[in-house]
Image 1 (cartoon, rainbow, N blue to C red):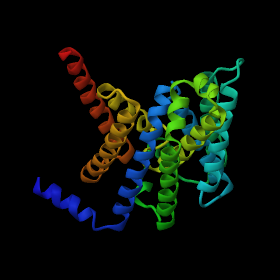
Image 2 (image 1 turned 45 degrees about the horizontal axis):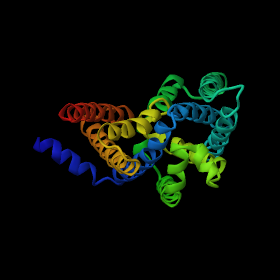
Image 3 (image 1 turned 120 degrees about the vertical axis):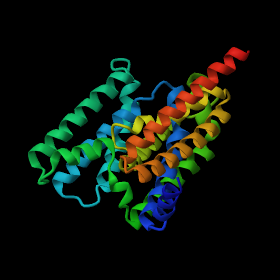
Image 4 (image 1 turned 90 degrees about the vertical axis):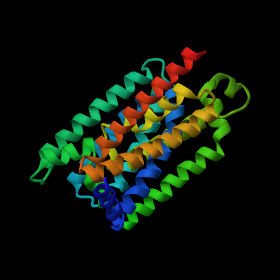
Length: 283
């Protein structure tokens, strides 16, 4: 136990570990805030669809030879988030069908492009790292850290400033629109926030595990808390704690960062589920 604590303490003497912890905490905080809204709007899998879009954009960036893929991945993911919102509201094509179409299509084309044009000698390793997360979270450059900090703070600020409007749109769009709230604008804002979070989280947990980072903290909080505000605050705390604990376990046990964080989220959800059941029994 002492050796383990010494190992963790020594790891924080390295700058790249501190960078990874800062970015990981900020990403988990942003994911949890918007996750509550997505779960309540029954649009949870938009994160999964957009993460596959981001995978396709990363493949294009790799083929074209763009060194910093953020400049391509972020705008493409934002545009697809807007497309999902617009087309998903169509009576002809429902939202879940659009997500499935874009998700599978982007994943397939991304992998196809990487197979046809990639110059990497370890294609399977690159794909696996992109899908399930990699050690790139531990090799962040200072500029990437500042970009993540800036985008994360912007997401938190937007959520706090427009909290009341997001609350109204989340629970009753028809009533919100009747009271003069610009529902389309705030839905668009939510879609853009989701896209930014997806792109930020790619290095942390990988494209296939992003939905877990968004959904599990919200579901855990909902098992015990009932009001929107309490669920949002509890979700944020749970997400940050799980992310921090997951990264510490990953460092100590040399396990994959993304998978470890998600595993901790699942275990915490199981604990909150049991707590919720006990609370119901006592009533």
